[in-house]
Amino acid sequence: MAKRMLGDPIGIMDPNQFGFSECIERLINKCNYKIDYDGETHHTTVRRLKSRPYSTLGAKTSCRVIMNRGAHWNPHFNSFFLMVAPSVYLINDMISFKSIDKNCSYGQMHDLGMRIPKTWAIPQHDNSEVTKDPKAKDELIFCYHELFDLKEVGDAVGYPAYIKPQDGGGWVGVSRVENYEELHTAYSKSGKKPMNLQEAIDYTEFVRTVGVGPVMMPMHYNAAAKHSHDRYHRSDTQVVEHNFLSAEHYQEVQRLTKIINAFYGWDHNSCESLIDQEGHVRPIDFANAYPDSSPISLHYYFPELVKAMVKWLTFCAVTNRKKRVDFAYLWPRFFAVAEKLHAGELDYAGAMKEYEAIADEHFDTKAFNEFCAKHMTDFDQVALEFFDSDEFLSILQKDVDDYFSIPQERPQKMAHYTGIFKFWVQCEKDRLGVKA
Ligand SMILES: Nc1ncnc2c1ncn2[C@@H]1O[C@H](COP(=O)(O)OP(=O)(O)OP(=O)(O)O)[C@@H](O)[C@H]1O
Ligand SMILES: [Mg+2]
Image 1 (spheres, protein in one colour):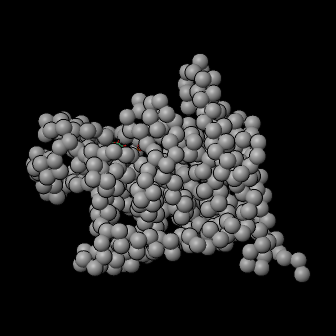
Image 2 (cartoon, rainbow, N blue to C red):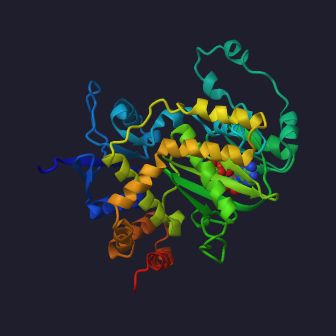
Image 3 (cartoon, protein in one colour):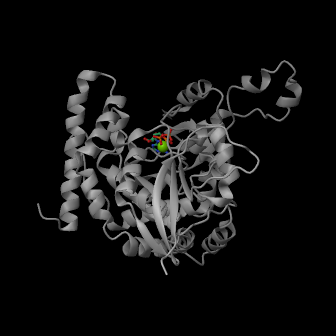
C-alpha cells in the first residue's frame, strides 16, 4: 500500500536579517525531501510566517516547527506563538527568554559550577519610568529601594570590570571601568536599565559558540576589531584560523553551550567564553535570543550555521518533535548533579560530563545524528552546490548592499565576502573529497 504523503511545513520568521532566512528557505527547497519516517512519507516544505489578523479563539498553525527570530519586537506574533506553542516546535519560544535575562543566567550557571566571573547586579540608576505616572506615590515605590554604596559593590567585584545592562545586546551600554571614579561615571549614565558589574577577565582567547539544537559551533572572536562585522575575523590581517583552540577547549566550550541551551530549552543561542590566563573557560554572555546570524558578520562560519538550522528544522518537522512548555523541567536533574559537585563527589569535569549527558538526552542528539545520516545523505553535497552558486552570491549581494551604506564601498566588500565564501567552498570540497 502506498504510504500517505504528509506535508511538513517549516515556518520561518526573521524580520531582522535577510540572508539567514533566505538561505534556509532556498536550501530546504533545494533538498525537497520526501522522507519515509514512522510509516509515512514526509515532504518538508517551507513558508514565511506573516503578520496578519487571526482569531485568538482557536488559533492554529499548519507548521510543525517555526523558526522565530522576531517575536521579541512584535507582541502580535509573540502571543500567536504562545497560543500555538503546544502544537508546534518553536525555535525559539519567548517563555524562557522573557523570564531569563543575562543576570539570572550568570547566577544559575554559577550554581551548576561553571566558572562565571564575579558579577553583581545593580538596580537601575534612573527611576523616572516608575515615577512618571502623576498618580505614582514616591513613598510607596521608594520604600522598596535601599540606599547602597556603589563603592562597596565595585570593591567586591574588583577592577578592571565591565558594567553592562542585565538584558543588553550589541554592546549597548557596556563600559569597561578601571576604578571607582569610572564606575561612578558609567553608572550615572546608565539610565533606566538594571546593570551588572562583572569582573574583567584577562583572556588569551575569545570564543563564541553558536548552538542550533545539539550542534555547537565554536567561532573565534576578535573583540578588538574596529567594526562589529569584522569581529569574527581571526585578527586584522587574518580572516580564519582552523583549529584555533586546543581539542580540550573546543570540547569544553561546546559542552558548556549545550548545557546552557538544554537547561533553558534554547534551540538557538550563543555563548561567549573567554579563556583566562590559567586556561579556564569563563562564560561571560550566554542569553541571546537572536544570536547574530548574518553572513556579513559570521562570514566563513555562516554556511555551517545555515546547514545546522536546516538539519534541525527538518528533524523537528519530520519527527514531529514537541517542545516542552515547562522549560525548567530539567532543573531538578541538573541541580542534583550540582549537589554532587558541591559535596565533592564529582569534580568540575565530571559534573560537566553529567550535565552534558542530560543535555544530549534533551536534544535527542543520538537520534538526530542517526536521522541526518539516514535521511539526509546528500545534504552536504546539496549545501555545497548552493553556497557555490550565483544564487547564493545574489543573496550575499543584497546583504552587502543593505549593510554598507556607502555605495562606493560595496564592490570591495562584495569581493571580500565572495573570497571568503569561495574559501569555505574549497575547504568543504576538500573535506568531502570532491574533485575539482
Ligand atoms: N567580564 C568580561 N571580561 C572581559 N571582557 C568583557 C567582559 N564582559 C564584557 N566584555 C567585553 O565587552 C563586550 C560586550 O559585552 P557583552 O557581550 O556582555 O555585551 P552585549 O551587549 O551582549 O554584546 P553582544 O551583543 O556583542 O553579545 C564583550 O564582547 C567583551 O569584549
Ligand atoms: Mg555579548
